[in-house]
Image (cartoon, rainbow, N blue to C red; front, top):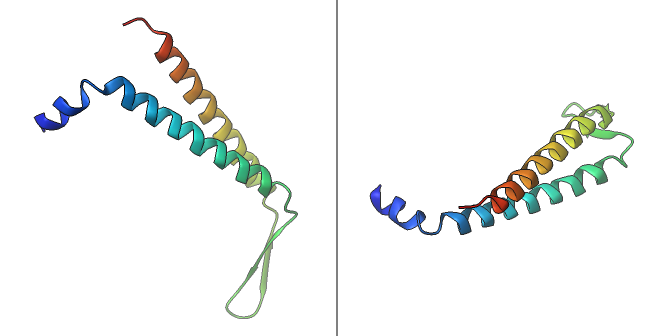
Length: 87
């Protein structure tokens, strides 16, 4: 385990920045798909017995939109706070 710490310790700031930027990019892609899903009126599922299952996705999408937006806000605020902190 000591070799992991010796590898990560000098590059800790760069690794944190890279991971934060990747998480922000992932959340932006997530927001794109959520906003695209808002244009759907209903989702139709075909059951094994030949029936149809229809559902309105808007209630669930609003929860995903709020969660993803807050996650993105927290990541950007944490990254900006961490980058402006004096070491």
